[in-house]
Image (cartoon, rainbow, N blue to C red; front, side, top):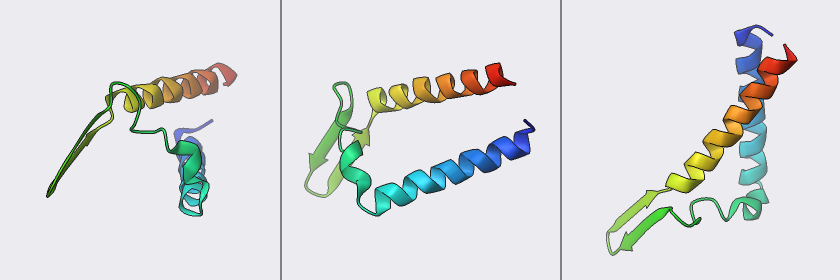
Length: 73
């Protein structure tokens, strides 16, 4: 699969996921950013979110998806 087609399909998938979350499916992902190891600091006038573990989990998931795509080619 050429890289152009792959980028189009990934973009469409991301748009679909964004639409689902925007239209009320966000409760499925309420855990995101709240895993042990994610840093949240909330003070008056200051908010800091550093979702280390959540981003690590997404990185592993994306790597697995890309590995499967490469194996299918």
